Figure (tube, one colour):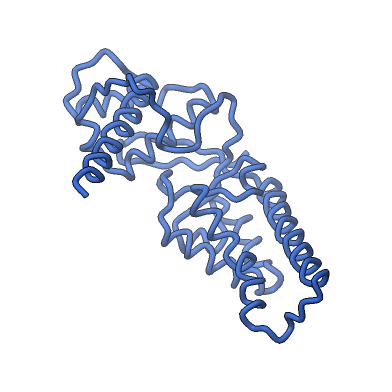
Length: 246
């Protein structure tokens, strides 16, 4: 399986398994199948009620809006997934291993339309085959790629993990870490739960201890997960304070 090796802000090489072409294809077919079912269902419903929609521009627009924005909507709200990608366990990430922003999802979406109508998608397919990180044209423009997330162990697919009411944070220094770096830490953790390999996390946790001047015996996955939980706690506390002031 193809892999991408990325040098991160922590000067540690992060290794991703790229989403194989056949899983990307199956994910796309699943998404197209969902859209086909939607179109047939909506058309049958209007036919059943004898609605003459052919001359109603507003209805036609509303009818096709879910089709038009399907990819953009799901990739944004499912953090790089769509129903097809979710079932195939693949996900869109940035070329640095983090979570893409709305602008990057928008670029991928815009290029998908162009790729789909140009030579039956052949330029995009050739780009996937011949680029180092199996990126289509939209991925190259947006700075994204698709990785394989088939897990060996279970891990939540969100940065914010549930905390009980008795949770006591340990490291307020975590708020000095940038959001994009926390997203990368989350990706490291996902890879640990998928592969069981902690070598990179040991090195990263050591560098974080130095950067934040942390005096703790915690290291590796234990430290990284504690930092993510603490960030979750402090962020929600800030939101509660802001809501109280309003």
